[in-house]
Image (cartoon, rainbow, N blue to C red; front, side, top):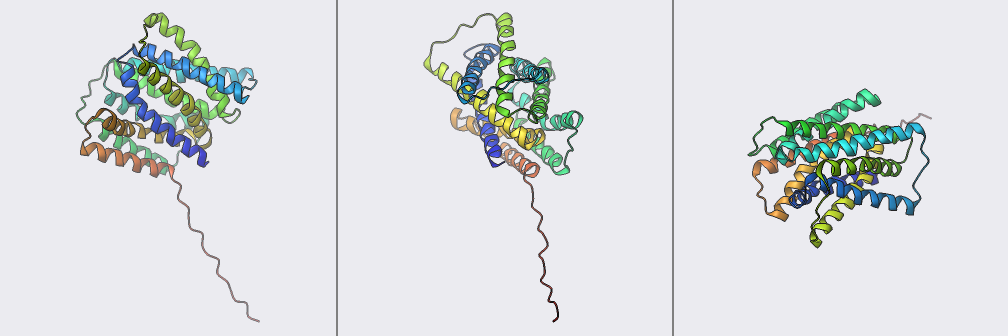
Length: 298
């Protein structure tokens, strides 16, 4: 259980930092083609890792269909919506919409998996969402447009895929789930990207390939494995709440890497996010009444 928490925390830090890398990459290449290229590298990494570690397993027809659905929802649709959204709206607006993921994930978990929603988790999720609101709304202007629809699609597909992974984890190991769902999604995403965007004209700069490959292997390879493990062991709702820490991590990395100024209200928002996550995930141990020694008269 501790390993699942550690892997989840590392993944959130990497994913939050990846906003900075992704922002730089999409200025070098079309966003959809960036996503397709990263998926090729991450899928290659997962397949090679699976072969070395002998983690491939035979799939039943039912497992194959659910994994295919996870690939379509969690990779094809999610990546298409996410990178389409950045063309129309700011990262702040996108982060605000994505912050609804814990609530939607809880709803999907209740409807599909029949998982009960603890009051403490629900309250913690709402506190974290309020923190995200303070974090991203400073100076942001909300104007509903097609970008908001794409961002909502990214949020919905992310939440639904977490529930699918949770469902599969009861019958398959998280490594197998990650490999097959990612590869299936990549197989569908890459032809779609090239058909709609054309063949990419890559930069030959070493820094471009370094950032691209590292972001693919770390965020969509290792971290995807760790996060699926966390979903399997901790539940989709709790993991979704912790992902709200990503905007706060992105703010910190942006400050140190790109010298992006941080306001006091953003710091307050980040602290509120952390408080909400702690409230939703930390289990309080009840003190057991001490046994009193009763003297028996002789």
